[in-house]
Length: 230
Image 1: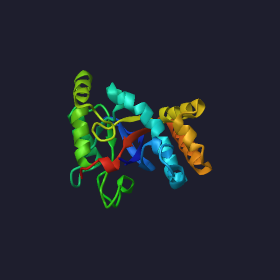
Image 2: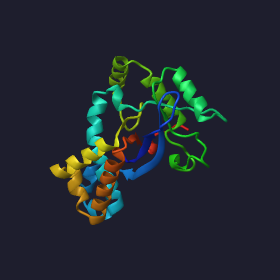
Image 3: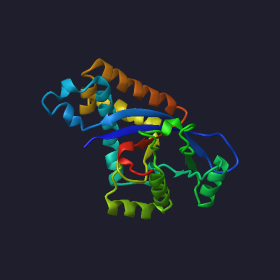
Image 4: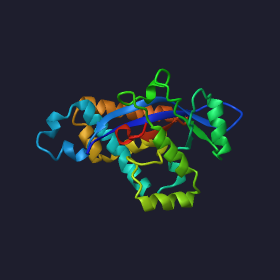
């Protein structure tokens, strides 16, 4: 089964007082993803997969190869902080104050859900991501103590693509993962270099993530087609 995959790029806002706020500013869209094996294991698959789709599949495989082990043995640091929930006409300060009262030590702003101003969160047909349902599930789970969170997720057989909480990582770290695949000649990298456009896109994503990583940007791993809330 395929799924869509995106990185929501966040930057730490330089503001006081109150808890630190990570604000989403841009998106890296890998498009619709399927298993890497479909590029090599099915007759005609290589010819039918255009370079742009190939690039997304390969880049996301490089990332998922690191996320699967983290999902199997989850740590609190691998999950995004509390995500702000806006009520109608609320300001960021009001939403942040509620998060702080709930015990959050930092928070992440994914927008007010207004499609006229929060265009980077649109997925399809006016749906928003992360959905409010996924945000609330995320906030509930990360409010747990680390040992309790790990126990809950292991009992649930936590799946990074389909379930909360939402994972994140330093952009510089993601770039390092991709560089390791390049240097090691991983199956994903070998598939990427079969087409010049595909290779160029994967390389561009890696370099972009490396550069914004220098200012400590963080990326949320989002899978809009698997987020069925509102």
